[in-house]
Length: 135
Image 1 (tube, rainbow, N blue to C red):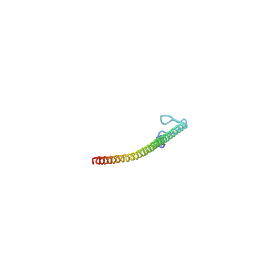
Image 2 (image 1 turned 90 degrees about the vertical axis):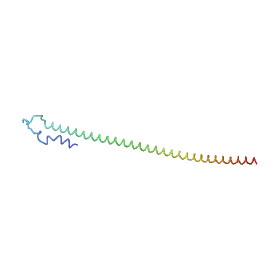
Image 3 (image 1 turned 90 degrees about the horizontal axis):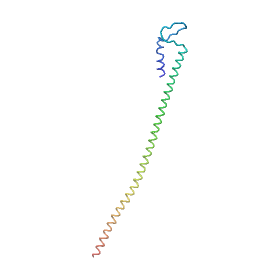
Image 4 (image 1 turned 60 degrees about the vertical axis):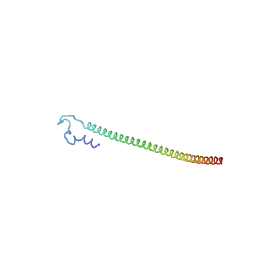
């Protein structure tokens, strides 16, 4: 980037068409503005300062963008870890509830089987008792 600015600045000087050394009292061979060596040095140093400031600003902006992206990435990573943890806990709670429900189902099944067996035994007992009473 610095090279491009340097090339642009000195392109007209490199051709030799706009740069002529004059001694005091000599007439300029072209119309325009004349600069002393000090003024020219001031322009070059000011340009160099502005160029360096642009480079510093670009570096700062680049680092700031990188820091922002790293921050956003870390926030997404933390969010991901939190959600994974939350869903793992939800799965563990669901599994525990399924175990509890499975135990309840077994108790209910045995309750139904016991009720059926008790009903059958009662029916047989009543039938036998009624049959004995008629004899």
